[in-house]
Length: 171
Image (cartoon, rainbow, N blue to C red; front, side):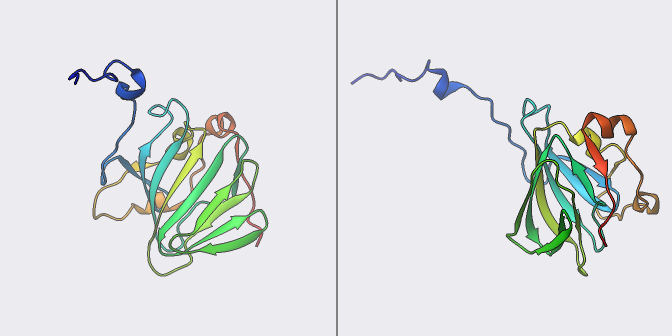
């Protein structure tokens, strides 16, 4: 019996490239009235994806927009969120999944009385630069300042770089 591990030099068994972010960690910011925690972005994933944890207060969420170069997906953990899909809406509760292919007008809005929690991600990654352009660092237990509640447009240069356009709400 050999005590030498035959796989010890095989890179399929020894290469360590995984990214681990423990619960409660990541860069947390106020994005408008929402609280977003960037778990991983394009830099950490070699451009593969951006992954965000979000808490969306009542009436929180972005206005309608389209990402022409990015797919986006959402998974609702708690609460309910209304999603816009082109010109119609769908309400998703806990366990609901909503995939938005690039080029589709969408938004999410919390129409409930309590905060909703979800995770969402983009492929490819890197778009977090646009997402967090006007964000402020969040403080635990503190509501976002009133000035964050007013919708400030991200810089035009970033909107163009990430092929994102704000669009009108259908209703």
